[in-house]
Amino acid sequence: MPLMGSLYVGTSGLQTSQNALNTTGHNITNADTVGYVRQQTMLGDRQYNTISIDATSIANKQLGLGVEYSQIRQVRDVFLDQTYREENGRLGMYSTFYNATEEVETLLGELDGASFQDSISELWTAVQELAKDPGSSVTQGLLMQRAYTFMTDAQAVYDGLCSYQDNVNRDIKDMVEQINEYGAKIRELNDQIRKIETAGIEKANDLKDARNQLLDELSGMANIDYYDDAMGNVLVKIEGHMFVTPDRVNEIGLQIDETTTFYDVFWKDDARFYVNEAGDTIYESKTAPVFDLTQELSPVLDTDIGELKALIITRGDHRANFTDMENTYDENGEVIATDKENYAKISNSVIMTAQAEFDKLVHAVVTSINGALEQAFQKGDGNYMSDGNGNALQIFQRSTADPDQAENLSDDETLFTTANLIINQELMQTPGKLGFKRPDDSIDYETAELLKEAFEKAEYTLNPETTNGMNIPSFYSSLVAHVANDGAVFKSIRDNEQITVDSTESARQQIVGVSTDEELSNMIRFQNAYNASSRYINVVSQMLEHLLTSLG
Image (cartoon, rainbow, N blue to C red; front, side):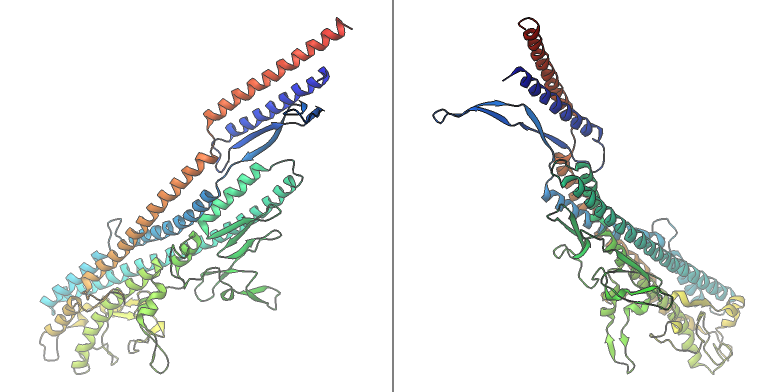
């Protein structure tokens, strides 16, 4: 090879070693960067010059033109990526469920020491004391005080559940906006990567790292599928619906339900819509829901993936009360939905289940106490245990209904629900109006005993799925146990998923992670190669100088 040509061989070594050192330095710099994938330097031979061709020899006579920097490649395990993202989605769902059970337990007072059980116990004690001496103004006053405390504490718990439901609703809005933002970033990165790699000269590895990190984040929020198209775009589906396409992002829409004030989550591109007189586009969100919430949550069906779905399930679709665990009747009194069917609609929601079961407890206490007074009124002369208007005396009243109006399951305003309760102010101011004295001035031990029996009789069930009867004092304990058991199940699944996610990520990092020790070894190797190329060029240069000056 001519000496001038040898200079180019040495120069190729310098350039290649310098590029390799740059790549190694880039790896070391980003060793702690989340989502960064180690870049590997691939070296190759440059083109060979053929001097002669000899068919009888083993190889032709050729001269190499040096080394070239073939490519910077990333190595990822597709299987580990898919496993991580699927299990990360399950982790998101069951973490949300477990966090919800913890919050409900806190609201019920089971984690901070101020338990609602105290209010029930104090009311039960007041009923027992009344049964001993119904005619005493002290026991009557104690009953009213404990009834008022019970009602206010119950409403505080129920309001807390509703506030938490509203917080989850806001979390849904924030997460939908985050998902849409991630979708827009993925599409933007698709465009940038395609522009860089179209010529086939460069690799947009850092941009691909950012895109893969977005997919990792997105996988925890929703059940995603993704694939590369022929142009190098990553296309993403959420719940089987196209989300990121080559030319657009099909955003998830949000619309407030006017009845519940909760956000409906829907696909904008599939939903029916109309334009109102003001020129605003109004979507019919129910026509294109993102999630099919009628499906059973199952790892086999892959229906238990994604934090957003978990938030929607946890929140539910309305404020629940005891009627969500009762039969539904049509106008003719025929059952159109059984209590079990209605309960099945809310049973996946931690919040709605707690609301319904808690309201059932309150309803049982309220109607039992008022029912005992109603029986005394019915047996009397029309004045005994009367409110003075021809109706039975009630300790608990409804804020939106007349005292003589019967409960109607289809009309919430007539129900003795937690949110609809008020205390009888007249009895609060003058507890002695309870009397417990018959027209003949005899003490009414019978009604006081009825109140006591109402608490003691084991005829209540927590929900339609339970068959064992319980009394009122044990009802609340069963409610708390139900929440705690659900929490224990969710915690167990969450912990197992966390182990799976961590082990999968550890396996991924063994492939894509940066080892600083290995990179430092590479740096020394490429630095030595650089120095060798430099010395080679010096030798060729000295040879040229000798030829030109001494042999000129």
